[in-house]
Amino acid sequence: MSAENSEKKDIRILAIESSCDETAAAVVKNGREVLSNTIYSQIDLHTLYGGVVPEIASRKHIEKINQVIKTSLNEAGCTLADIDAIAVTYGPGLVGALLVGVSEAKAISFATGIPLVGVNHIEGHICANFIEHPDLKPPFMCLVASGGHSHLVLVKDYGEYEIIARTHDDAAGEAFDKVARAIGLGYPGGPKIDKISKEGNPDAIIFPRGKVEGSEYDFSFSGLKSAVLNYLNECRMKGEDFSQADVAASFQKAVIEVLVGHSLKAAEDYRISTFAIAGGVASNSSLRAEFVKECGSKGIGFYYPSPVYCTDNAAMIGVAGYFEYIKGYRSGYELNAVPGLGIGEKQGVRKA
Ligand code: KG4
Ligand code: ZN
Image 1 (tube, protein in one colour):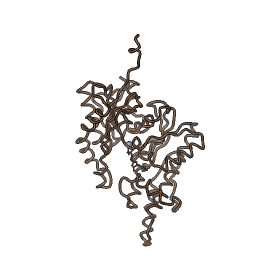
Image 2: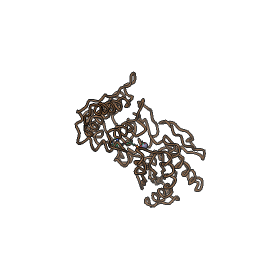
Image 3: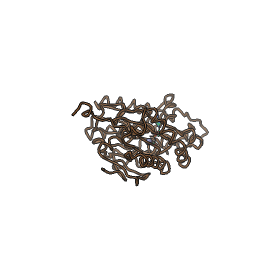
Image 4: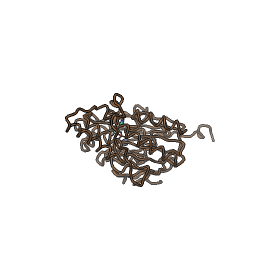
């Protein structure tokens, strides 16, 4: 065999993500190298309404998706002829928004014959950690905290997941967004609470740390959210002012204590020596600092993605798609949007 033939062929994945309010495409080489990562954020549009409006999101995806894909291919220096597979988010997410990406991916696959692989959005968030950390390999445990999800996941191998804990009500990001709105910071709440908390006293108000009876790792944030709303109502009824920074910092401390506490308890109980975080909330500066400190003191290796790979993006879908692709998973043209797709679940994705 010639040296040329024995060289491993590079695999380039074109990834498409449209599950919520970001229209995104990326080209990822060999599962870890991001050749391009194009994101059209609709955030300014939805800010007008104080949150994501699903119908507007779908319409905007339709307007933007072709251009976002073209830009991504150009920036990667590729054409479709260089692409080995198309990875697309098919759930969980908003059904109309997901359908735009799924239909686009199916159309490109049909027109070109490039294989199609449906990808789980949450698994994508977890895989974002592989981009900047070549040394990170399964097994490890990952906290995924986003606007719609809060899960502790055991990553047993590439593409093999076991859910250790979940939220029983609000997701962590949802709590950030609701509290931010209540104290007048607006949408999206997470980054705003992160910023203003630096000026506040995290011990000014003692908010409850949510617990779930009978499941020590699971999360609950609705009680905390109600406690913040009650505190604000009491202030208003007494005609007293409240400090936005103190409420934000005290709320944030309560969320972080629960997220970090449950995560490290589970990591220790499962004898896990490597821990990662993922999802929009993983870009929270105090959460990262607390994990760095706690993991450091316990001798647990800690990994987190840069903020651009924490919030929704297509590069993470390209990474997850690569590991599915090399395991032989493919999707047919019956691939559909699955708004409630669970972690580790497959619908319309099977071994070829
Ligand atoms: O992963 P993501 O971009 O979208 C979903 O899949 O939901 O996460 C968005 C969530 C929002 O709730 C946002 O407020 C939160 O992540 N978030 C943050 C920060 N940046 C984004 N939460 C806390 N601190 C941040 N710095
Ligand atoms: Zn997400």
